[in-house]
Image (cartoon, rainbow, N blue to C red; front, side, top):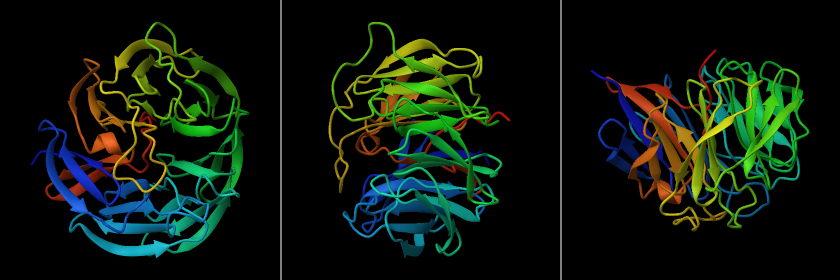
Length: 353
């Protein structure tokens, strides 16, 4: 039986599943009415577990900070767990035993909870950057990358000690969506207020360069505080896609690695524009955007706008209405009725080691 590659898309209160190999036809939709204010989604194939964080993101509003575990085989909720402070965009280690839960971009502190994936219980904590927001666990599970909404360093913690051992920066402003290569040599980091991104050397913690958009196809509309709130590295680490809110996605050749400047090679127009608000939506409803590569590199999904871009032609092949109203989406692949691959973070990372 061939592998079935599925895209899971999470608007508030539900998720919809699309078949990548059959024109992105809708496979099913599953109601999760309790999941209002979704902030993070990840999955683990071997344990057939889907985790969704929702509720308040650290300011005491928008409901109890909560995470649920859903069984992918039965589409039933296994557990629901509330947490103090807040929740945000989660990641999971490759063995599926531990989750890393940021306490929210509006939290005054810098705590990431370490969560027992079987029970949802807090088993540790990492003191990271202020405004805990985005999270990526490395492919080997040795490190976890911590992006704080109120800090201009990207932090790296050792998962064996739960201690930060490196900080990448100082960056131009606070950290927004970011991605890393599979060998953990380079980080591509979007920044508050910057149309573009910065390139960080993971080994020594320095900023190598700042990259902005060039040419006639550049957006100038004022909108979200992070106008490039979406960055995705192709699995083969040769291309980087970056949002230019609300009108474009720019493509960069990064095949030369961290020591060679990224080259802007394509501008993909977003039609319709990303300039709207999500619906349904509990809070933080402005369509900031998000980008995600499929694991095989064939497609890039444009969160908050809906386009599915063919990376060979750099043209959209369809537009998913559900995806136009959320920036939370991941890929889960199946074979013979069981999951065989699942993204361990919302961010699309490189897979070359």
